Image (cartoon, rainbow, N blue to C red; front, side, top):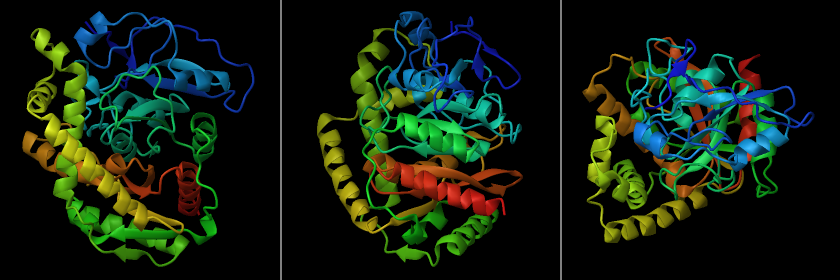
Amino acid sequence: MLPGVKGSLNSFLDLPEILLPHAISGPLSGYTFAVKDIFDITGYKTGVGNPDIYQESEVKLKNAHAVQKLLDAGARFVGKTQTEEMVWSLSGLSTHLPSAINPKAPNRTTGGSSSGSAAVVSACEVDMALCSDTIGSIRGPASFCGIIGLRPTYGRVSLEGVFPGGPSLDVAGWYARDIDVYEKVGEVLLDKRELPKLDIKNAKIVTLKQFNELLLGEEEKREYKRMVDVLEKIFGDIVILEPLKYSFDELLNIVSRIRGYETWSLFGKWFAEKDRNLMPPVKSRFIRASSITKEQNQQDVQTRELIKQELFSLLTGNRIMMLPTTPSCSLLRTASHDEWDQFRDKAGKLFSLSCLSGFPEISIPLGKVHGAPFGISLLGPENSDKFLIKIARKVLEYKEQ
């Protein structure tokens, strides 16, 4: 059995309290943090939202690298947060536990798979929280819960001691409400590979017309247009690019197959050993993944490189791509399977560019639809992570005027 949850948000795992030693002083001294239950913590098992994995896990003897970096910078660990099962869901509902509550819209989901981490940051229960993104698991909950969430450049935050979902897609990241805190954590967690000579004064925003087609309805289109207007006031005229060579249907199919193939390669034997205790949506994804061939994966990996090259060519010279983080705010907790299928399809297409390229994308809490948060994203070239955080600061400061 998994440990239960505690607190009004169903977000913290109900585990014995462990006091992890942290530096007395440092850039994050005085701040608190939570950790998604895919990062190893000394003295705890790593459960990844699955009862079988939790039972089979050994108690960890070492903290994940990202956890240790925060401790060494003076931050204080508060607790582990629940994750959707095997980091393989967007809804926030694929959990064996009571699902996490969205503090900004309690009748709607938090999104996933970083559901617990997003909820506790949004509710001001911690200053920051570690999270991860394979296909949208940082950006979706950030948009839905009205917080800041960067999917970093692939490899810029260490994955040592982090449970894998799809190794060539996985990134570790963090949430915060406050841009000052967000920037300080970035200085601690991001490695030194920042692109030189990016100039925020000359930042140029570009976009694709097709992004409008990935919004859920008319209210979303109006709010997205308002957010576009805000960025235009800050950065000047926005350039609309020609359509990409590959369609968004193709992008979604490629990233989904790569994820499925890699997860099956890691856990197919584990899955087949016995009738695993898995939520139905996750079990069905395992079954679909089992049929993806090595040849198909090789073709997908080759195509991914072409997509990365095309996106690289579009993001030269201080160019940043703007897009809606998600098709709308999160769906109602009572939404039907058909509603989720439609939403998941559009969201996966929006998420796919950053995943396939490995380029960083930050979700900024700028909009609201149906009374709930709705984020806008900025996607930059490889290793422009800190530049994106600076641009997010400029947007949020304008919002507060």
